[in-house]
Image 1 (cartoon, rainbow, N blue to C red):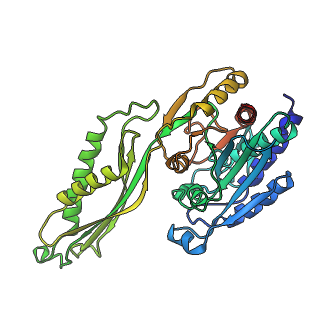
Image 2 (image 1 turned 120 degrees about the vertical axis):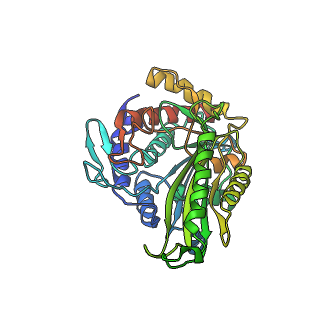
Length: 402
């Protein structure tokens, strides 16, 4: 269809506008992005609900400010299905190595560059302009489309989609979450973050035997963890695109000075869970392994959960989403796209936990690596954004006519 139907020129402008508003998480001071995005969407003709998360709850989740946005458009008698589209506006900090200003939304070589351009500010534009296409031609449609724009995906999603659901601000029948154009994600990994604190007793380095060396015990734990990582590599998920469970030690600190026996060593680990695993069971087993390895005279080991995100597993009913997306992708992209899994974790799991069928589909290339997601020079190809708008719009049209 013609550009004036999907209004692609204005979609690109919206993408650039939302990329130019910083929303790094951490520190997670995201209210400004929500307020400015709401104004941009209102200028496009939408009524935008602003749902501010209480400050105390925001601080509890390690952020500074969160306001989630909800758009609701009813078609016909509105007794058809309610379909939600979810994208997140918080982004990881830019980091080093950029060839352009990460907040300038530079367009070059048929792509827009900027932090969040792919993950997932592009889908602000995908979902807004897919919905505008339905509003431009609403004949025969019956049901409701909601857009959920949330702001804590990088911190776990508990005060984003989960909060909207817990507050009974929404209860959709089906959900499409931000994704990429060349695959329909129906499963993804979970994630467990643990902080381990190894306590000992300080002593003078000239007489180390008079203390209890926390680093010795920490070294025993690290040895056991790296052995566990090697063991996990032998396990393979049956879900395409997932691979093996992963374990990484990402942060470590400890000690007082060069000439003092360390009395405290702390480190954090990231354990990725494949869909076949249960997060709480993995947490129990890993905690037991850590405490068994960290034994020693005068040594105390504490294990604290920082995050537990269960894996996304396909729910009954997702075929209602998969089939129309596949059908229109075949027309627009001239290729068949398949359901698959990804080794990440996303906000989609919160909808699945509420027993709502959910898939990930939106604007982007074949892989996260191609988009430089969470890396320098993150970008979104404009042809992929245009395709995603068309595919999502026509899939929604099918769902609201069924």
